[in-house]
Image 1 (cartoon, rainbow, N blue to C red):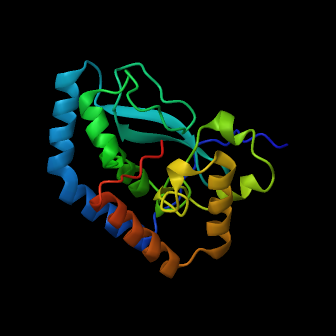
Image 2: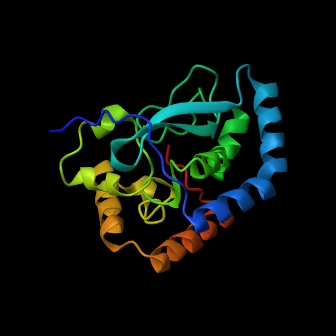
Image 3: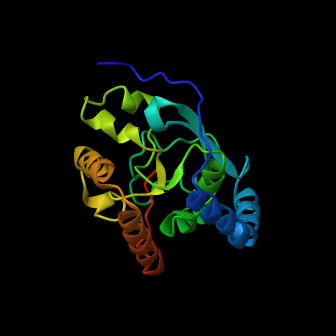
Length: 197
């Protein structure tokens, strides 16, 4: 199995991704500012959490999120935490419920490392265990939201989630991306959230 060690590499964001990311950051900047202050007031440490992830073609990058746990904690390889985990702060629990902790991902979109829609990026050790078929999810940029996130993310096993990601790679289109965005908005408005690591 080929090891994915990829170095830092990015490409310019697509026009639609760029517009959505810019508008998203402008519209949510007051919310981001309030969230960052709240995080800092509740626990010491930077309000921004940075973690190494793997993107398109195995290129690695630092993904930015709002910190939702006590400083120094790590949620592990893109897996959901148990409910009531003591590492999650009160502010963090609220941010996770509505996936607001992922808003800084928009910066990664502007940097060309992520797209608005695509498979969620995972950490290098997890990618190294991919089968050749699972590695196909690296053929596209990772996204803020994706097909697996709007189709039962929490209730799915990891192999099932990857299979949905591979399906997305084979069927991606503007129409499918719009469907995913609409479903994402519905899940967020309904309060179900989309937290995925």
